[in-house]
Image 1 (cartoon, rainbow, N blue to C red):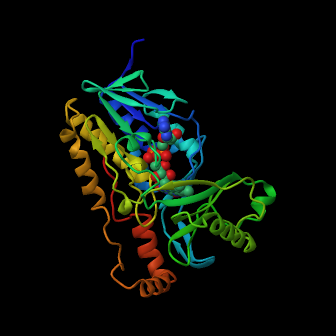
Image 2 (cartoon, rainbow, N blue to C red; image 1 turned 60 degrees about the vertical axis):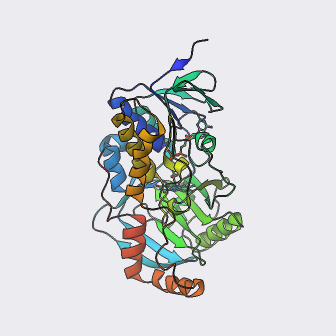
Image 3 (tube, rainbow, N blue to C red; image 1 turned 120 degrees about the vertical axis):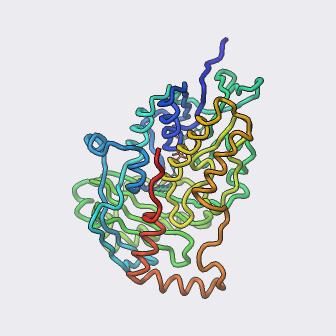
Length: 374
Ligand SMILES: Cc1cc2nc3c(=O)[nH]c(=O)nc-3n(C[C@H](O)[C@H](O)[C@H](O)COP(=O)(O)OP(=O)(O)OC[C@H]3O[C@@H](n4cnc5c(N)ncnc54)[C@H](O)[C@@H]3O)c2cc1C
């Protein structure tokens, strides 16, 4: 049987894979995306994107919102524990809410890549200067974009889940019925964020049109389900969300940039998005770094004139570092003893000034960091 050949095989059709594919396709490369799921598929995620993401994707907002949820956001409530402390408003749209089942499908179809969906990566072996994937797809370059548990990242030596300090999160998203909508005081333009008392994570409730997304993510997965249930019960008791959440919370994990050290290049291989452990350290926002890494990887691919030896791909590794900084960089306040740090952070978190200027503008909106031009 002759192999299915392409210029670049991308494993994973999430935002990282589809963004990278689109740039390569527009430059004339033959790109194949393989994904184990059939799209539209869901992804455990709050579904919050900033205007820089809209710009980087060159997203036609009017076209997108015609038949999909695009919730404009212009304010936030932040709090500690289960207590709301600060309401912060802006005089413009500072974020959007999307549904991942719609967003990822839209980007994948728009990428122009050939698709092999419902097909999982199983193996890959070197054949001269090409890779043979699953014994039937031949490509000189394989890009691993399979998310946190990406099999190509594992193939390069990442110790997925074992020695990594990952964030574990649980989330539920559902359409509100009439009585649930009446019991929900969270509004679309004003999501709510609640930091855990020990500052090891945060919970959110986020309304997107008539859909509600509630979740909580923490470092490690110790008693995660308990934290999630306590959080949801408390919000329901305050009348912020309905008490009768349908279905179960779904879990997933991701690596924060400061805690990741997965290999991102090898001969004929690049790793992008969550597979490379790129989520912003303070907020866990991962869609923007996924998209940016897809753009940076594509720029490197187009610059090396089909020579995919490791040393030629190292510009991508350098570009990640220049964009996101050194891995393992100490967060602010890390030099202080932990008790003092916690006390200080708690006090700061409860002030309006800190909530706006640090938590929101710096950590969550990255207002200081312009979009990467594509
Ligand atoms: C609870 C939670 C809430 C979050 N909220 C936000 C948020 O509001 N905003 C934000 O910016 N980020 C958020 N994130 C992070 C964000 O979801 C990720 O950073 C983002 O999805 C990464 O995109 P990606 O393309 O790298 O990977 P993914 O979106 O995970 O896509 C990977 C793709 O690879 C496919 N795949 C996996 N294994 C295989 C295989 N063996 N073979 C073939 N295909 C495979 C999968 O089916 C999937 O389609 C959240 C994460 C969690 C867990």
